[in-house]
Structures are given as structure tokens and as C-alpha cells.
Length: 107
Image: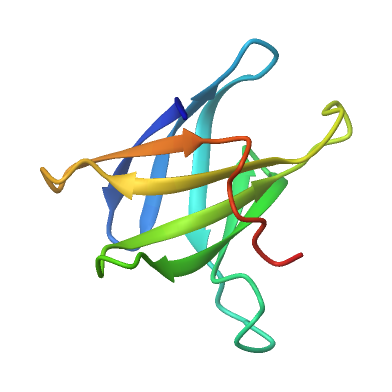
């Protein structure tokens, strides 16, 4: 597992950055989806500027901890990136954790 992003929450929206060896995105926003078409539809959309780069689904861990499961994709990626956004238990900072074994959300 690796932390590839840090976010702050303001209202219902998250803002922060994603940094990997090939991605260096600042101004990333995770915004609630206002027009969900069903329970399996994403609960959030992920943007850099005006470009949508992914989607997120609200999840609950086996321990009852709420988090977002993200699928990030862009034409410049060789494959989608799957990661989970967890709070750091201090309430004001959230970490985007990547794992090669992350459950694929929405697929």
C-alpha cells in the first residue's frame, strides 16, 4: 500500500493532490454526484480543473469505517488507478491509499 494523495474536506467536497512517479496533479477535487442513476452509480466524481478523471463510490469497511473507493483514469494512463480515500482519524486530513490489490469499484 502507498499513499498517493492527500486531501482536505470542505463541506461535502474534498480537495488535494495526487502524486505518483507518472502523475503530479494538484487541484484535484472529489465532488458529490448530484444525479446518481442508481445504487451502483458513483457517489462522487473526481476532477482536475474542468477535466473529469475518475469516479468514487461510498463504502464502509468491515470495521464500520466509511471511505471512498476511487477509480481514476485518463488517456495518458496505461491502466486505471484504483485507490481508497480514508480519513486520518484526526478528522481534517484524508489520505488516498493505492494498493495493487484494491477492490475494483464499479467494474
